[in-house]
Amino acid sequence: MPPQSARPLGDPRLAVTLSGGGAFGAAHVGVLQVLEERGIQPGIVTGTSSGALVGSAYAAGLDGEAIERIARRFRWNRIARFTAQPRWGLLDTRVVTDAIHRLLGEDPRIEDLPRRFGAVATDLRTRQAVTIDKGPLSAALRATIAVPGLLPPVHLGGRLLADGGMVDNVPHTAARELGAERVIVVHLHAKWENVRMMRTVTKIADLANDPTVVLVQPEMERMAQWTMKDVPRLIAEGRRAATAALDDV
Image (cartoon, rainbow, N blue to C red):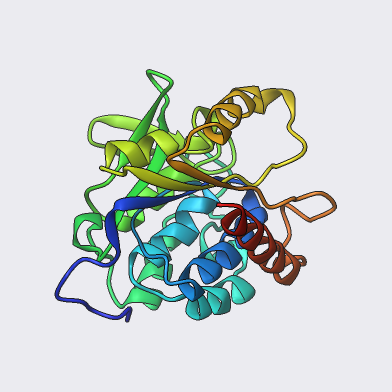
């Protein structure tokens, strides 16, 4: 179980935003560890896809050491498995609920977490970003990781939701919606982007010039995105990038 607190954790005006990127999300662990070591305590966490997976553990009150242990043991079958039942995707993500129960002892409601948390998903009908900041944590995580064709979309609040990275892979706006005045943004694709991510490139340029934003950009070049073999290197790169960004502030 995560540590319980009579009061919410962290500064309610400071957020950390964690972008998506498959196994690259392990770099977020190193960033969170550096924040912890420096006594920087965001009270708001937003994330897309793998960023939401890491961010949810942090929002639940787990420390950097505990999250690293989870990352090093993580395998994709913890969040998705093949079944023969009909569904809108090759894999079934209902095992996410079981994983959360093993980790936290329950499937908590997001509004009961010690830090404010928002997982960003895509409304498949409107093609707009949706910030899920209420309801069962498992439903939010299943929605934000639901890559179309691979993982099934989630019906939630009258919407059909899928992977948030399709419209907002760096959910800085969600952090502002939850009340953040200052945001530490972790962007996992620092030096190279493909055409599909050009919207992200424009946003990052804007964020780099925003005095209320600290931009952390781990470099993912030559790292594995869809296997877990580079998790130790990714965590170390997250630490390096966070240290460099904070030293520049």
